[in-house]
Length: 130
Image 1 (tube, helix red, strand yellow):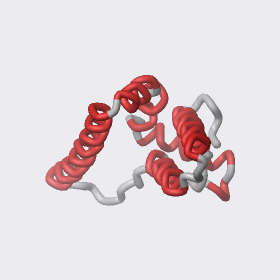
Image 2: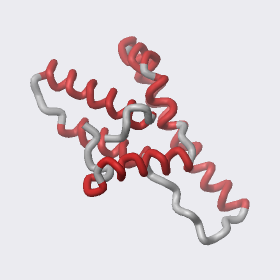
Image 3: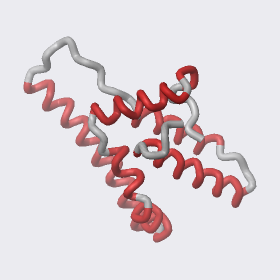
């Protein structure tokens, strides 16, 4: 994995630790959860491609609307989970310093995340974060 100082490394170290705790408590391997964490890892290290075409204002507005809708969905999921479970609220609040930098990273920061994963293991880039 990436060096410990990187926000993505901290996040995936936290997620891996939580996953191991869940598996230890339930005495079951959490294949689906592990898969979702890996998918999240791919998503947060995804670097926007350099566009060769110039988008007009209408196309940019459409893309921004799509992203805004996705953010609204995520906000709703987090809000509902926090409202229904005090442990979720406590966990998210207590670890915000780890996950917020990763989900709010800009394109340049994501390039750094991707480079740090590739430096650690070029063959397994984005495949496993545990």
